[in-house]
Length: 205
Image (cartoon, rainbow, N blue to C red):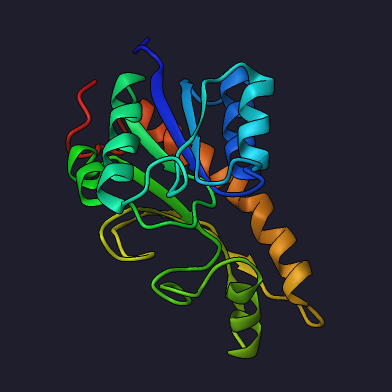
């Protein structure tokens, strides 16, 4: 059996997707080890979850490191120090800097609550995504796991799950069903990476 995949998380708020991945690691469904959690929000639920789980937790933001270049360097150094192999964005509301993207090129994943390339890009986050799906009269939605590049929600798609839009859906009811699939899909996709079924450029196993 290959050694566990070392994961680093970046999250801005509650971190429910991150928690789902941590739980999958603990049950053995995901052969990986959460190695560090970074948040730009010192009061985020993600940092609280990390501390409760005994995972190194770091607040890195414009407050701790004024200037985007300095912050980018700090994030990259923290991930490297903890020997992170794959970076998982879990509701991280900031764009990654060029040093971090270059160092972890092809090894940064994000999960988005819509079927990309639809309803992606700047401004499409949270309830706004589900509201846009409903207003467009879509028959289905669902999460997308993709690689991260310099643009929001733009990198190559690794996996998607489809969720039917039901009559009478609100952004909240649709969001709840999509989130349940996010938790499943993110873990399954990372496990496929850990097993070598999905090969990431730059990941040496």
